Image (tube, rainbow, N blue to C red; front, side, top):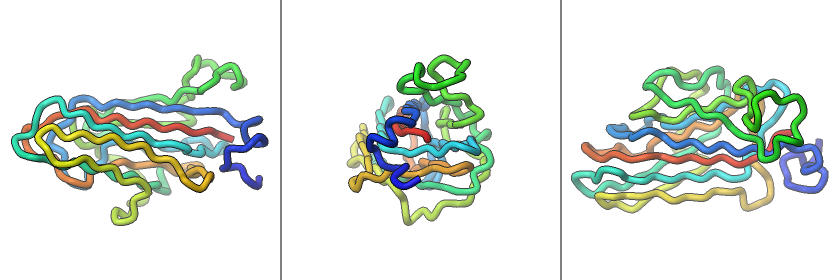
Length: 197
């Protein structure tokens, strides 16, 4: 369907608006390259079009020395299972307007059989299955200046009107680009906005 990834009148008439907000537990001791968030499109019939990604880091316990924070987001393929190792927290996407979605029995929540997502509990996540991302070609890169109380505040949206398309068994992985030094602790927030057709 031409233009299915664009926000336009024809798309809006049939699209299901989706929002997914995920906040981690108190995370510490993360190495460079560790996975901290994952979103997988489980549906075999619907594509997810990502229109916005929000990334926040809030330090709750100061680092012993200045600590820059950086996170990278990559689209990945062959995504057959989200992370189960490292005690991740499961999160569930919500419909923007549940009344427009037929045959839902989960209230305003998107069934886990269609979208699956996890975020770090207290540290790195592991034990997932996807084709490894090219870490020097991130789709989104968020960074915060070095301090003992670093913060990250990043809003990404495509500047050309096209959305980031996630087909069946495709997804997004967010991982740490810089290792977290000892003693520092904080919460990671990831927000995904989009629509499905």
